[in-house]
Length: 305
Image (cartoon, rainbow, N blue to C red; front, side, top):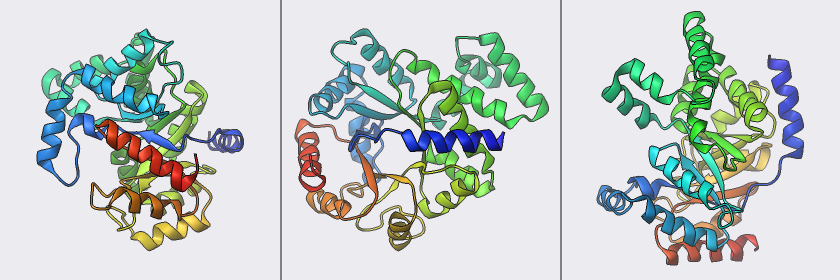
């Protein structure tokens, strides 16, 4: 299988469309803040209602930020449903799912047991086929079958909406990296491209190490999202190593934690980012019209509209 994966990956990389300069993230909707637990709790309370999430997404969408990089949290299924129901309003809206959402699986096992959790997350389409595929995978230790089954389960909520990029979350990427299981990256890449006709992306806390692993897996010019900011906040391996691979390696960089959870003023953060080579896109989260507009204007100023 390795040869076919490498061939398809190379062809797809050549023709792959560029990512939007700005991607809108979802941390603020689910109480994720790396610097302030108090702020995280306040945000989680504010966005308990899906309507509150949609209000913020509408502001971003009207500002021309049309791509939503999101987890596969159950609430995102409600967002996807609202987008499906109003195709005229959201004609240009795209999702970039990030999977798996680990808390979802842990909670489901706690609430429903192992078999109940499996039944809950199996794709609705081809339920028997998925169950048989999963059973065979477990029985034969067929890792490819397990991985593709989980991808299909996570993607079920996005049926009927546009998902041009599908991401593998850092919690899994970095675990696989630590285990040295590089073939899993090629399996993810191949399944995303062939079944969903999407571009695969990888999120990591250690950019230099992951790029080595993706090279070894035969993945050309991969899309990789990692923390990239002026003070080296949560950049495993050090800021110098990140700057070196940005200059020397062939990959498509997406920057996150650009503001270092508020430690760097926005203008300073984006000006510094614009000076780095090979930054294709930036993901950010915000919950107010003012912050969304400010970020878009700064990016237009330093990167060009």
